[in-house]
Image (cartoon, rainbow, N blue to C red):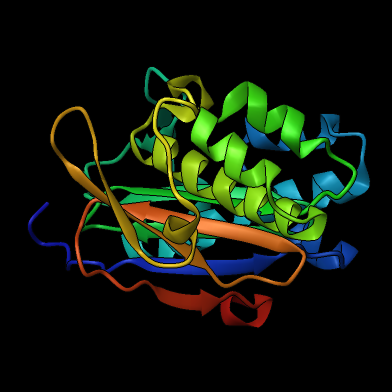
Length: 233
């Protein structure tokens, strides 16, 4: 719809809400299916993050779309990536883990975003050997233990964000493309099979997390914003 203003790339940082009264208010913004999924989640911390992520996403999208958050409807593409069921040119992508959520949105480009919490208990080399390209596995194997964990989760974020931007998800194959260690430190580009370029960059998040965003528009610096319940009271 041409009457809608262009929305530049935004990245919203959303910490999980733990206050019961606020969580109750946020739950009322969810669809019946989302509320049912939240109720079926037995781990309170996971449930709180799910409610926060999906309710705040509705609040932020609703503000841009000039719609009540409860009225927003979503549809999934054939690979399960949610899109808006509205005639509004607004792209978005959501990722949440542990107690933190990231939401990317823009009317100008396609987006993939991912956040992961660093888990030192994971056998990251075994995972890398199974899912990553050989070159990625070998340079991870040669790193010191702590650096290996940090680089593994940053690499995972870069790769998953790219697949999400393509609308494929993990079934697109984490080993279908490879990145170098330098790609994790600066903005890098990838050309997909359709000769379209994508730009990948890491995002600054709390120390225990790693995150990345991927877009198909060049020279785009995300406007990073931090959500606070008081902004929507």
